[in-house]
Length: 139
Image (cartoon, rainbow, N blue to C red; front, side, top):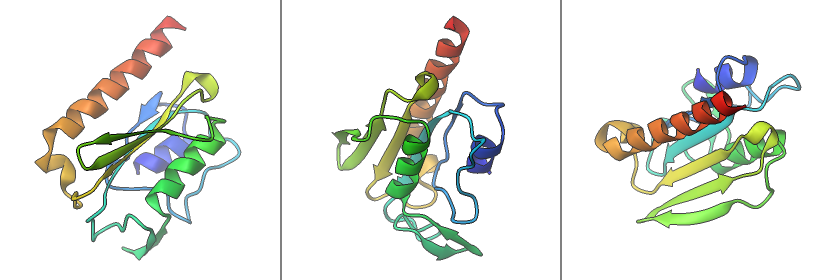
């Protein structure tokens, strides 16, 4: 649902699809407007596979490929900044249209309920949202 709202509406300055990525049936549209994206996926998620594929009646894209599609749509830097957060990996695509940013966090041992077990993820998402609300208020 979060991806769909980011694709089809202009109501949000930033979205955070947690434990989900783009699906083949819900790809970015020509009319999709720049929005900051913080996509978080668990590598051990058996509900929505990080490497993509059919599940729950949908065909999911590979999580990294999903982040790259968002970044390409908004003309972000082609090569992300990559940093390690413990055993997890954060990919950040910057310099996107409209001062937006695309982030992808791969949580190595994360399962589908990773956001309930690691409250720091929710804090990071909130910090991300506040950054893009502040940018909007300044412009």
